[in-house]
Amino acid sequence: MTIHPASANYGIWFRRTDIAEADPLVPARWDAVVDARLCTRLANVAGVSVSTVEHVMAALAGCGVHNALVEIDGPEVPILDGSARPFVDAILARGLRRLPAAVTCFEILEPVELREGPAWVRLDPAPSLVIDFRIDFTDAAIGRQAKRLDMANGAFVRELSDCRTFCRQADVDRMRSAGLALGGSYENAVVVDGDRVLSPGGLRRADEAVRHKMLDALGDLALAGAPILARYSAERGGHAMTNRLLRTLFARPWAYRVAECGAEARARLPGAGVDRADLPVCA
Image (tube, rainbow, N blue to C red; front, side, top):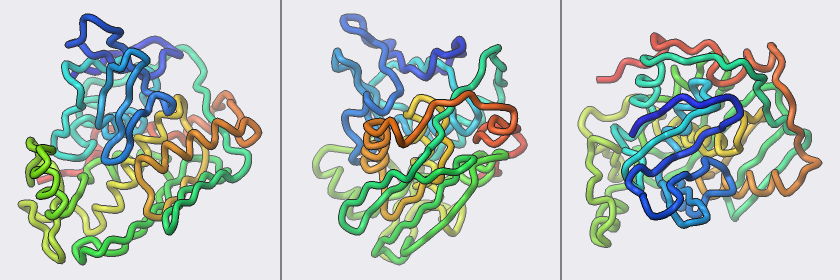
């Protein structure tokens, strides 16, 4: 997979380099999401798809990249270590180019909420993107966790980028018996079983699970097509609910407005002022 620079107002697109007989370009947009149960999968009108886009999308948003072409030679973004850190490291090592164009954003004007049983997600007006997430799992190794972070001033790179996806051993066994996740291992996910963390080295952070859910949320929100200025709150939320929340938002044109980010707003965007030195050190 290779991330190429793009011109102003290009947005984020994926290009399948292994596709020759159909349109290989897949837009990184909320309305191109075709499945978001275990990961976020995008597809174009020709049916060409790219899955597990949430980690690289979070890395791009968290580094302040609003225009890029991501070339990939298969249907799934590499999982790497299960976090966004390798993507962030590569992006910041290569460097960023400021484009001579204004940055537009979505300002939330009134609350938008979606509820499904005990789970809910919500967007509220705010001057910058704040993520407030709560999870509750029966496995004692995870349990109930909650965290709130303002994504300004490089918070994503410092606080969330190294946090890995997680799953239960029972889920791994079930997927493998169905012929799925055959390339998965303890090296690219945090696997728990009751009160035990089975992955070598244990957790990178005591609340790594909720932090990873926040990472996922930033990646899924980046599919809006421009930065969102809002407080995003979630209780037991996930990829599918975040996508449905975006669909609800954009079906209500009175609930948001498209605005040009001034200097103050740009300084509060997730990628403003990030530096490679902000990356957490991982064993």
